[in-house]
Image 1 (cartoon, one colour):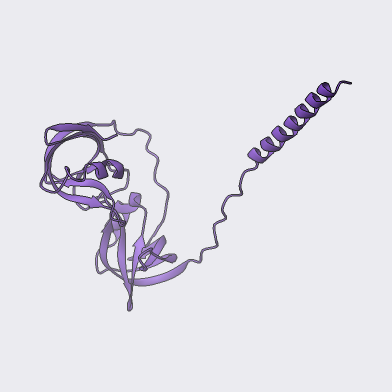
Image 2 (cartoon, rainbow, N blue to C red; image 1 turned 90 degrees about the horizontal axis):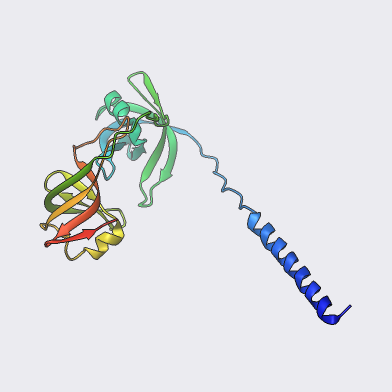
Length: 222
């Protein structure tokens, strides 16, 4: 057998072994991260105020239990049910998991709430058979406030006509010298609807911005 032929066979052999090893390594999936066991505790106190998300939709309330205050978080799709069942200054009992917020505050992830003899359990959102059609909006207004997240990143513009423009942080950063408070703008985009069970503090129109016009120049935002 010629040396060149033997060398070629050896190379093919090692290539097959290497490929099989790579294929086996690629097929190995990492184990899913195991959820640590969470203890459910009971907290009784007085409702002292309500909390909403950046879309002004209710998703929590403050509970004063003795000398300790807690933020009770609940899914936004349960907003109508919970805000109807309990009011500010009501005494309620909350079953839930206590945790610390990134800012160091006391929070409770709701499991159930009992008020006035009625218990409300956390339930998943109801899947709607038909979703409302997307509504495309063109409008104009004046920026009254930059909406920022807890890290200080701009995520939207609050306009003087009760409209919130949702915009990506990347685009907002590029517009930071143009889209400023008091600036007059035009915009286009799709309207966001409330989901089943949600209730808003104020009736803002939420627009997922597609274009924005500032100083007479139009920019594509997504």
